[in-house]
Image (cartoon, rainbow, N blue to C red):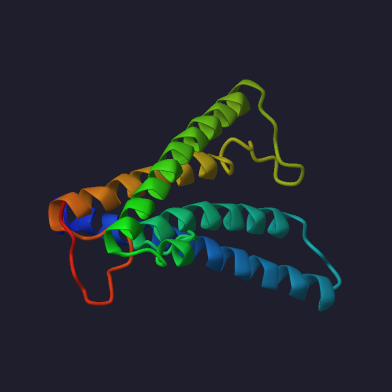
Length: 175
């Protein structure tokens, strides 16, 4: 039986990848299923489209957190990399600070949206699924993104791993 630290290490390194991968697989499979049902059997299904949309939503928001962890999220690094080492690092930290504040704001707003779905529930047109469950991906995705941003800076503090791409010479900057 795996230890707690082994399970935690797996979740820390692979949780988003597994969830996003399953969601994309479900989405692609259901879209393929829908195409076959519609064009081969002339019997389209509406439920498969709805589930495929939910898979896409979850994969997008979970993948955003994964991209933060891997430091591959869309940022304006080309501009930042035009500056010399420490200045580029300072600009990257500043942009991450703005991003962090915005991620907290989005987490809060998505939480409020989710609460409103508990108070005024509405269901999907085909499956009758309460929309609070599929749209929970907003809260989870933005919260995970915020946690991953904190984690990037924790690793910089603890291990000296830069919060940006490692410089070409492989230097690790400690301040």
